Length: 137
Figure (cartoon, one colour):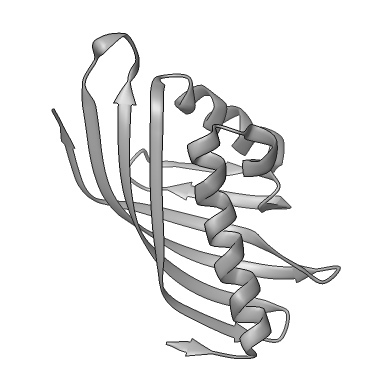
């Protein structure tokens, strides 16, 4: 479940935490900095794959525009490092306050990730996000 050098696993965990922090801040620059240039964001619940940082960023900014507050919590379930690549799974909880009194969405999900180490930095090469539960109040 957690294999490979501890320093790499820590760096990957910090990548996951930076991603979460950027969502809370709604900081597009910080959020996209977690991705490899040629990254892929696979969203099977929407039936789409987004490729490349400009495309991924644009979709994220559009989605975030609908929220007054976005809380995003992620906990790694596994991190397996093999050289300059790694596989990780994170479980997520989102609390999204919709703009204009539209209510609150609560989402539980899971990310299955492939990461690459480029110039000594771990980045998301592919993130596949699966919604496990979604409710709106």
